[in-house]
Image (cartoon, rainbow, N blue to C red; front, side):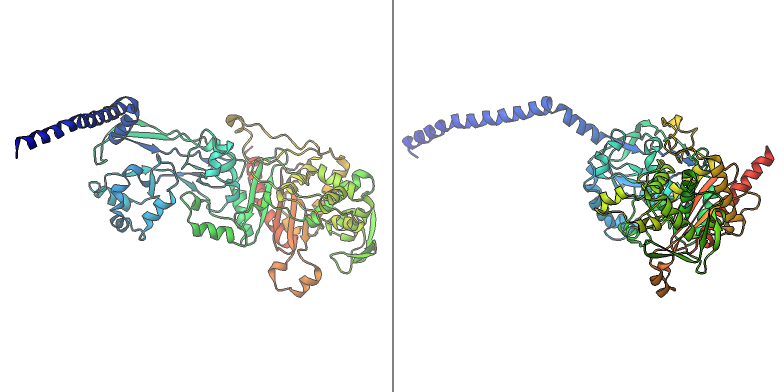
Length: 608
């Protein structure tokens, strides 16, 4: 190389030095800025990450409060169980071992992957639940492979335990994981977080805030592989408050057993206090299946079951009351002076009103009959003529005053109003006039009229007490102040009934049961049971005759009553779907309930 070439190369290199220096300065600037950002701007953020890699907080779910019956017997509590989880930031270390885990935990292939997919939208801070309610063999397997699977956590998780299985399921309700929509609602604001188990139905839902405890926490020191080295702090969970109900589990069991495979509902209450002693809806479901995450198949099966086991027939279904409504008619007639105990009608098996023939249930008729015999033998013709004289406006007035057509206010969700029809109602809903012939159908409890079992139980209790009826409630009055609730007010609009009229009605209701009337199967020796049967057509007479062997065309059955006659302590309503005659299927269920109550009442009297 010549001297000239050497100097030319040197000059070219020297000309590039400033550019290289600039690049170095720029790189140094960015490195300095990054270091400044890491050490000053994002110091707290990365400190938290470092701390999280060093320590781990493990949630410790609090047990819900127990639910007891009126005598202190446990209906719902919590059994100890354990849940296998992994934190999301350690999930990658577990995924590669899924096949090994599924084999060791006796799970179906791809079960763990499906679990992760189902929980993908849960908050990052919540652990992934791999398997709930693990058994001792599962715990032994995980602990024996702790060195290979250090990031797995076994968390104590109290699981709801319903001692009576399906008994009182609709009353008690069930718990399940809170949904996204519920998490945003005001009802759960401030004390429930994503992933928490909450009450979804029944008492579990209405009193969820009282029953819910405060979760605890365990903070531990872990090494770089996620293995626990030391427990740093333990905050014990605070259990929820126990709740004592008005339910008597002995009466509840007796009623549910008496239903057998029949569908329907039953409500028994203390008419003097409004305390609900029994609330049955059949068919029922087992609340325990919801305590863990219910499978899609189980949930679909429940939803598609044609018998609707999730539906509470005691409070959420309105049914035609049938002949039960004749008592409301009798009260209205006596109070209005249209009817007396000596009023007479002649029943020949049918009568013609407004150009249409209306039949009695007894084909040959009841002959000459007064009010007492009309109630005891449930004569339709007697009440057809009473309905014609009263008119629909007065019928509606007294029915509403006695509690029909409006919610009772019972402390359960989604209560049905029922329906008391009137000309104004029909104009508003059907844009049509009311026809006189419709009044005749209403007068024996059919047509547009509907009522729930809890409404009828409360109404009969109010009638027996001659005045306003307390609002039904399922939590003991003595418990309400402890949980910041007030005792519900009675039905203010219920008028005080003339005692002499109540005596007439009560005597007739006693006769239904004790004078070989339609309700004789409800009799309890020594208890003076009073009541009324009801049989409600679900299809026309002609359709029923054409399908005599088909159960789905069978009539619905009612029995509503109270006891004892002169100082009522229990009032109840029983409804049986496709039960046939009220005296055949519903009255025996009432008898079982009243017998249990009477036996207990006698025992208490003897002790005193």
